[in-house]
Length: 266
Image (cartoon, rainbow, N blue to C red; front, top):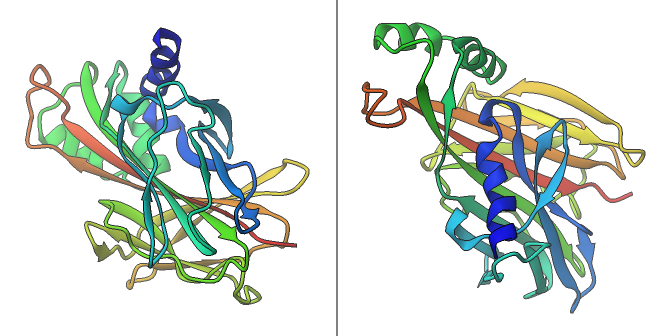
């Protein structure tokens, strides 16, 4: 148990500004009666180590379709974190929300690189206006990860499941025609988020990864081309202030990270 706790706590120690968190299925398409198996991964450019499950770091963990919701209750230290019989045939949505993690910035330049990369550069001025220091301030961050599995026929659709920040696939990557590209919607507290930056990580079968940055429309939708046989990680981040301007009292910034993973069949 001690090793398991240490392993997952490493996620908290990793700088939020540099690493995505995602659900990484062993297989995106499984037969009826098969097993849904997936790792938790943290890394950069769709490459990262797998981590064990620790309940105290998990706010909620379930697999859902429009008709079925199955709570996932791994034991401490389980790896892969998701390893259950497929609850039903069709499109299944694996969902994991972490608890809050906290990091301390020792250098304002690190914070500036983070907010610039995630399209929140104007917050540097807000930081100054709040009278916050260049070092020693904290950020809380929380992750919201989803993965799409096709069980049997894979039919169905992704749905909004009520996460504070969430990416929803408009098209089913396993059954719909993606010749015109993949469509996703970004939701923030249940409302579609327009003009939001979305990063798409496109992994080819040889492991090479292409990264593109997009903006959602005013209606909160993004479109991107996909290739059969490729795996995709879609990511979006919101950075917001807290009600605290006292660095000694706790985090002064809070970031929300949403991810969605799926694979386009060949």
